[in-house]
Image (cartoon, rainbow, N blue to C red; front, side):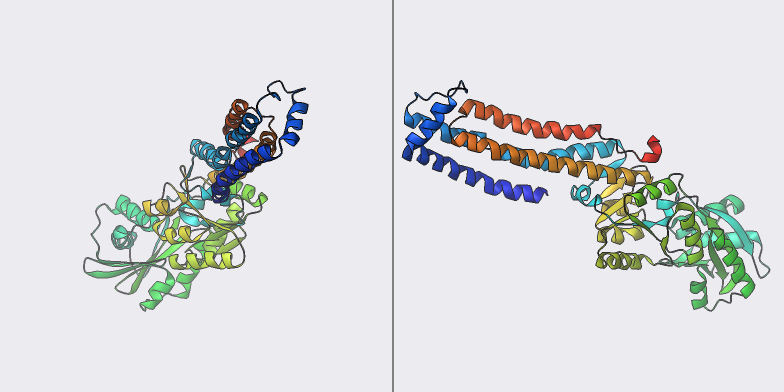
Length: 426
C-alpha cells in the first residue's frame, strides 16, 4: 500500500502544478465568472476581497492551489502508522523487521508451526532409558551421549546433557555426521555409533525386533520422541525424550483459529508423537516425518492451493521455510539464522505474540486506510475551494499543515488499541 501511495504522490505534484497554471489562466480568461463567485463569497467569508485587482486575485487563487495541495499527507499516511505499529509491537514483544509483514499478517489463512521450540518449550529432557541385548543403562547413555555431543539439535543436546549428569565425562565423537531429520552417526572410542530413527538404523542393517518396535510405539503414544541407539550396527537400546508444551500454546492456537487461520503442525517427528502433541494444543492438521527441505515444499503446496501462509519456527532447519512463507515468524530463543530469515521476531517465543501480531496488523492497516481516506478527502475538498478563490494563501498554508498533523495524530491513536489476546484480558 506504501508503493501505491508513493505512486499517487509522484503523479500528484505535477498534476497540481498543471491545475495551478490552469487556474491562473481561467481567472484571466473568465474574470467575470470568478469575480461573481468572489463577490458572493465575500458576504460571509471575511478574508475574501472582491475589490482586489483581477491579476492579484488570479495569482492568489493559483498560489492557494499550490499551497493547499498536500502530497505530504498522502506520503505520511502509511509510514506514520507503520512506525507507531512497529513501536507498539516492540513494546509487546513483537519485532517487525519488514514493514510489509504488518500488511500481510492480517490476511494469513494458514499458520505453519514447527513443533520443537515453537509449540513446545524447546528444552527436551530424557524420560526413558531402555537398554537391550545385554547392555546397561550406563553403556547406552555413554555411547548415545558421546555421539550426540557433536549435534546442534535440541534432542541431541538433551541426550548429551542427561548422559553427562549420569555418567560424568563422555568421549569426543569422531567422523561425526548429522543426517537431517533422521539422526546422527559418529565414531566413539573407535566404534561406529548410530542414534536416530528406525528407518536410519534399518538402512545400516540394524535388526529391530517386534518387541522393541512395540516399546517405541508405546512411548510415542505418550507424546515422547523415541530414538534407537546402535553400536557397531547392533541395537543397544531405546531412548525417549519429551518436551513440555508451552503454557500459552493451546489458548493462542484457539484464538488464531477464531480469526480464520488454519494451524498446521510440521515436524520431523513420527506420526504418533506428532498427533499426541497436536491433540494437546488443538491442532487438527499434522504433517509428520518431514525433513527440513520438505518443509519448504509443504509451504509451497499450501500456497499453490491459494493459502496465505505464515510460518513460525526457531531452528536452522526452519530458515528456508521461513523465507518461502508469505510471513516468516522467527522465535528469538532460536538460532540466529532463523531470526535473520524472519519478517517478524517474537521476543519471548510465546505463541500469544502471534495473536498480538495479527491484532496489530489489523489495527495498523485500519489506520493506514483512515489516513489515506482523510488525505484524499482533504485534497478533493480543499483544491476546488482554492480554485474558486475563497482560500487565502496564508489560510491555505495553515490547512495544508493541519492535514499532515491530522494524519500523524490519527496514527498515534493506534497506541490506544489493545492487542493482547482475549484469554489474557478475560
